[in-house]
Length: 92
Image (cartoon, rainbow, N blue to C red; front, side, top):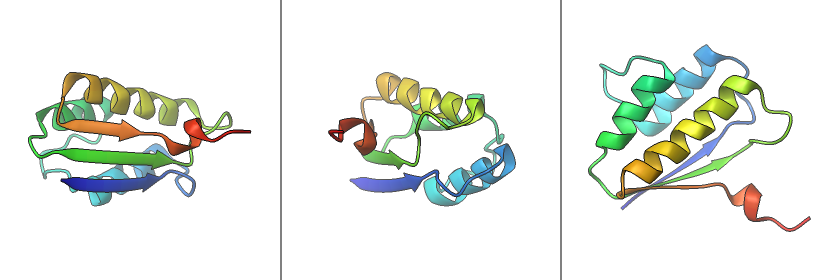
C-alpha cells in the first residue's frame, strides 16, 4: 500500500499546485496539469493508495477547493484509492 501526505499550506498558485501534485503523487509524463487530467490519473490508479490531505480550510481559494472535490470524486470512483482529510475529523 502506498501512503501519500499532501500539505497544501505553502501552495499559492495553480502552477505551484500542479508542480506539487506531479512531484508528490509521482504523476506520469502525460499528466495534463489540470483537474480533469488529475481525475483521470487517479481513477486509473491500480495500486492501493491512501492520500492524506492537510492545509485546506475556509480560507482556501476556489481552485484548491475544486482540487479537493476532484480528489474526493476520484476516491468514490476508484475503490483502490482512499482520500483522508484529518483536519475535518479534529474536534474544536
